[in-house]
Image (cartoon, rainbow, N blue to C red; front, side, top):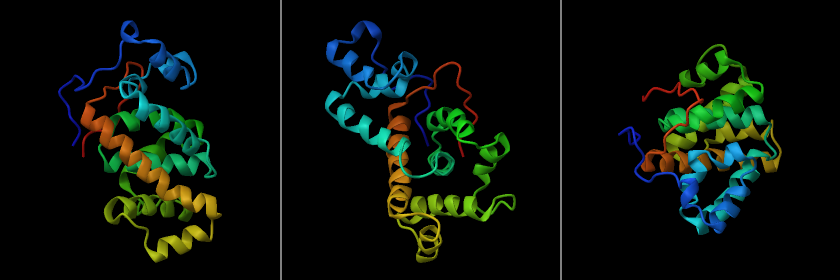
Length: 188
């Protein structure tokens, strides 16, 4: 369960508090709106970690997996982790990747929902197995290997693992969703 006191445990770094180093790091995020997101303005308080984490996340967001597939993995991970911030920020990214609102809401139901294609159900099952067992079953691996190349296969657990890390961090730090983002994920 996420920390939910209506305020962060570690607040975002306010504009007035930012030194040249923090501004330089936030400038790597891309765009002034993104640079002001609470995830970045909170994590930049640990500059050494932020400097190394940001490129890794960027590699996964522009990786070999199709964007729609990646977003299914991320949204399912957000459900598992009660990660409201992650969910709110990946709703528009998921839509841009081709997920419909009905599909996004169905992510909560998991891989057994009858409306899923076999390919989508497989991805959700992979996210579930990684969350529950920290490993993909042989059956799921074989099915994924029939669909994806080696780079994509490597990215499946990396995406799920990375977004667990993000969820654990944001939930624990109490990072708040910015105005203008639709929360939409009720604690499970």
